[in-house]
Image (cartoon, rainbow, N blue to C red; front, side, top):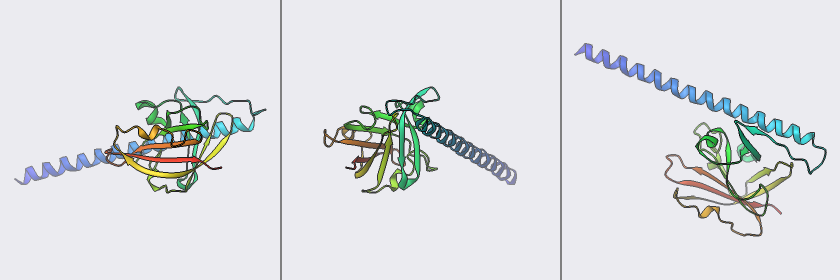
Length: 193
């Protein structure tokens, strides 16, 4: 009996080490990705500084995907490049365009991002409040500031958040999962005039 207990303890210790190793590896990979994304944003900002005219457009890619702009949310200290499409692969890399026209055009520009437990991507979006600001910068270095006016949760199949509240304004919608992935957390903002 004592031998069986010792074997169980050894197995449990081994499993604990493996699980801790997996957690550490995922954390390392997430931090590495975050550092790479910060370099992409820095590269974009350097190219903006070197532009001759407002007509110039920067062309940046990350892991083979086009970057269409930058999202910055000062309240939760995030600044990420926005990739041009949403799929399982791009969502592992960065914040992604989910729907809408061009960044900062009239209408609803919707952005998706993972709710990472370590606070990367949209992991801190749940801390945002009505009145907080979101800044979007397009490829011509035009930045528009948006103010959050609504925060709510929906069923994962509910896509009504993609509709514009007012078709004549600039809007941005942030979409992420709640912890447990049972709902989607929707954060809506409109241009500050």
